[in-house]
Amino acid sequence: MVACYPGNGTGYVRHVDNPNGDGRCITCIYYLNWDASSDAKLHGGILRIFPEGKSFVADVEPIFDRLLFFWSDRRNPHEVQTSYATRYAMTVWYFDAEERAEAKKKSRNLTRKIESALTED
Image (tube, rainbow, N blue to C red):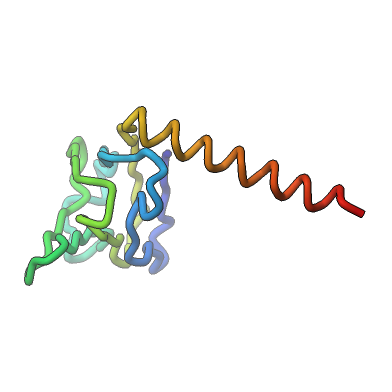
């Protein structure tokens, strides 16, 4: 996924990348902000991670050429704080094959049930 925050006060609310067991287990973020990342206090766009069960947060500045890895599940809720300069990031997820296969199977079964219910008239 490639993300662009236009810098007009946009951000992304606190969330977990894999709240429902869809197979994503590691989130990898690569920052592409070579001009806007020099002063995160001024430009914003900081990634804030709320480690599960901890009384602290981790603030990660979106510095050009920075690569970040963290668990995709509930252990690491995170948000992108308000950005006042254009911010670019590329996100890639590492998937657990067994969890992903199970998630696809559940999705197919749900789709069949919905299709069946729609054709029963």
